[in-house]
Amino acid sequence: MTKNLDRMPSHTMELPRLIVIGEKNIGKIGDFLISLEKPKKVSLVTGKHVKKILQKKIEKSLRVSKIKFVWHTAKDNELRSIKNVQNKVKKDKGELVVGIGGGRSVDIAKMIAFNLKKPFVSIPTAASHDGIASPFVSVKSDKPHSIVATAP
Image (cartoon, rainbow, N blue to C red):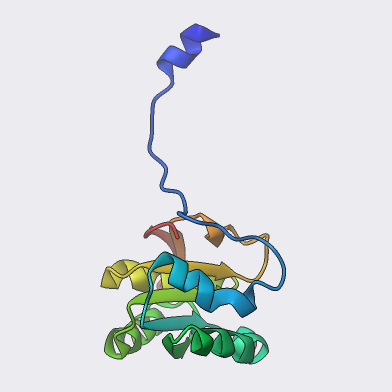
């Protein structure tokens, strides 16, 4: 067994800095962001359904924490849509990019943060979503493919 361990190639994994797991954490998003970066302003990237459900709780938490915010709705993960949202995120000058929701929204936020060299926070709304730790982004252009960005 030791001989096999000697031959294992090494590799580096980028892991999330902090993970909070549990129900009812959305109402504490402001405190969580303050514990990470102390941002004055954040760019929130989500889908229209998640925004409709969580907007009030998230906004209340951010206001209590004195964090300004701008919402950006990601309609799909096609390259032109990502670029459109990215241009808006760049203009709003948020200090970090927060992806909230399912795979598409989190992937788009991850890609935008990577492209703009901004910190990224992943807030998946389903425990089964791998965006909690994955550096990969699913993008559609001529054909679907994955791009390596940065892990949350």
